[in-house]
Image (cartoon, rainbow, N blue to C red; front, side, top):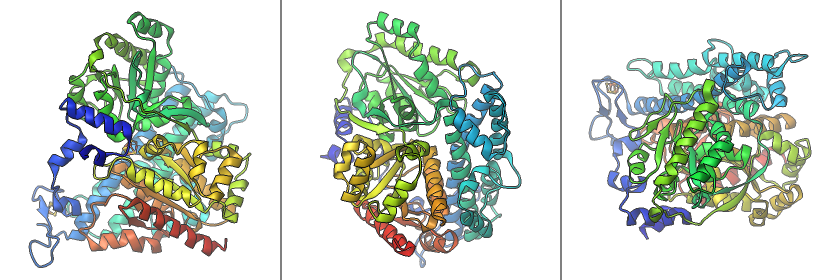
Length: 622
Ligand code: BF8
Ligand code: SF4
């Protein structure tokens, strides 16, 4: 029963049983040991920003301290803590974007080891946005100018971030008026760190505005760069069939899991696994072949572009190792549990870190660089192949569960599926066949039954004729639940079902990894521009039913800053400040035309989104 309460996913339930049998600890066990979690921390009332602290503010007005040693109030402390989370998240996404810019630069200079510019159409489109001359120039020359232009976004001191100008004019004007139009990506992140140093910005409103500004630099800047340059280098995703869940691991193959985020590494691992010599070597070791699968956002990236199966989402990473069938867990950056080190030592699994930015206890470090990408990728795959001989077949336990899915709905692919223009989508929205569009995204969180928040919320939305776009760990959860197949339109309301059947698309569109939420923004901006309204006028809403990471905080903030009402399924650490809570859930409406709601019940959360869409439809007169 304990296990059934932890996850709704059958593969996860089986693996949790297996973990218990082997007496292996997982995140859920560590969570239970952590309880009760610190009440001050939960409310955001603990400050460790200087060494006079830590200071803790009492949540009760009549007992305990109401101010930190420097005089900071609950409002100041909560606001500072919150925007430092935004800084962390925006930094993570944007540094990912920077790595893509770097790879494009090296590729254009002919210095990268195995990459090429694959999507020239996208390259030209982006070049036009930057007013880079394309006529009669080689893709490398254009790519070089583009790489330098996007690279410059990070260190810009003045002006604006180019891709933010995809937003409707009204939105940009509103950002300018509120003083939250970001100047440069790194600048805004650094400014959060400065303003939250002891004794700098002590106005909660002013702090939160800087948080929003930085988040916009993430969504319309760093994340958009990550998405767009990935498309240039690896191809813009198109609908492709894939498979999800731990059953994608194979008994007779060398199993390699690519886990983390940046396609710079995983693309090369996928290519290296096709190397005939390595395949031969795998066969010589007695394996039937090499099976590369993805996990978390890396999984989304390579499934969208190659149909590579996805082994699971965030809370399944430990379980994948516990199958005993993984020769190598290859990681780069973000959402990789340090727990994997100890766990891999209980099996033959080699835990291989590759980024100079991310080392882990118990991992072998095989540092990756773009200049020698293919060479290093082959070496890493070779290490996995050699390790097959060490697999203890008696210890292997692979749950059989897999689900088919259709992934790869980039904005371009959606337009294509619509027959070349957005019109059929606009018509379906106007006629009411589609009530609205939801972006449902984000992580897993042990505080919520694994995947339940994701699946229930999305099911409720499609039942009510809401077309759902998804990324990240939500995408993987709903794919496992079978909702990412055209057949799943049977579970949709009549209007949405009709649209899906006519177009042959699922009711839930997989738009990629978390940085690809920039794709959702692009679609919303295009729809708003086509209707001549602002994004905040559209019947659209966002949700992060099981969010946990700092990246998710940044995402929620830029989605709201873009004018999209957003429901959070886990409670953010802000309730210690009624003022900050009020700003996020109410006052934000007056500033950016959207706000957050917190609702831990997924059905009620969907209800809030639907009510919001109904209100927006009414205001639009449709
Ligand atoms: O960037 S959804 S757990 S994997 S943070 Fe992480 Fe959250 Fe998953 Fe991808 Ni996004
Ligand atoms: Fe305490 Fe102020 Fe220092 Fe924070 S900054 S730890 S509230 S003295």
